Image (cartoon, rainbow, N blue to C red):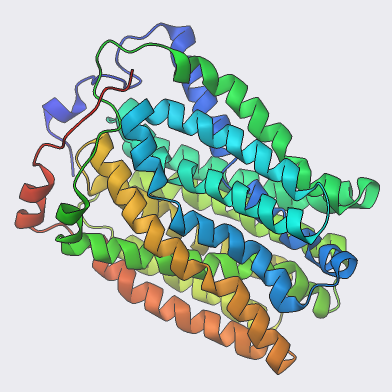
Length: 419
């Protein structure tokens, strides 16, 4: 649907707002580098999981709980982000998240079991904050390019995950798993340095990460649909993120190849994350996109279930395309279904709180089912069933908003200064 002329006009904070070229370049570069930090702390665990479990004597369920701890924090602590954004602004909240992430990953690689889980919790807290504010940052700085910049930052998300998946094993083989796990801090610190000028500059009274009543959001049916779709696509994603290397190693593939295959599925997501938001963002309904994305994800699951050692690269490409499209659509729908940065941040917090709490069940449940059954057939079958539920929720979340929902979404929020 073509936006009206008023929506196409330059808006405050957008890339067309007349800022000096160097400021715009620094803004976009900092935004991209921040997006690269949204997944390495999570994706970097699974290639190291066998070494961590062997060194610390963890069971498969306890190994899966490392990722579970982080995903639980992504859910429980998501509401922290809107409160921080109201007080200090979206840009400064993102900077704080990057600094917390660096601290958490350093702690995670510092010692034994307590440091491992504590550092993972701190890193998960940081990612929770950044996950929630990124759609609001898109709405605030690029309101006339939501599809484009959603695609850019989700592509950065999966690129960071792919890089971590590919690099963790070589770093571990040379320096040990603790150094590999802590190495993510370097990327977070680099992003913080690049984003700091944007976060610390003064704004001329621009409305910032304001507050939108959660009761109003929860009265909208679309909020619940978005919550379900966000949660189920996250559940099916984190199942594979946590256990794919182990599944491939149990199928007879070497450790480094298993890590590279996980990197391949993450890289494959980039194709979908760069293209799907651009197309879906122009459409009034995203139902065809959510259905296609979920069916492609199911095809990837079935390939891993039925023939993990036969053409594994093909299954990873298929899985990556489906999962990349799914996460991009979930985040795009959040940005499209709310009218301003404050509302987007609030909806993002609501969706990601419930969504990641649901997703947190995945790695632990799959590890437990594997431990009980002694194989991967039952766990992956449960994953396919979760994809079926994802399909239903995607249809509900992707439908065009009703006139009553659109009218409610246009009610003005209460805003606070971003200065």
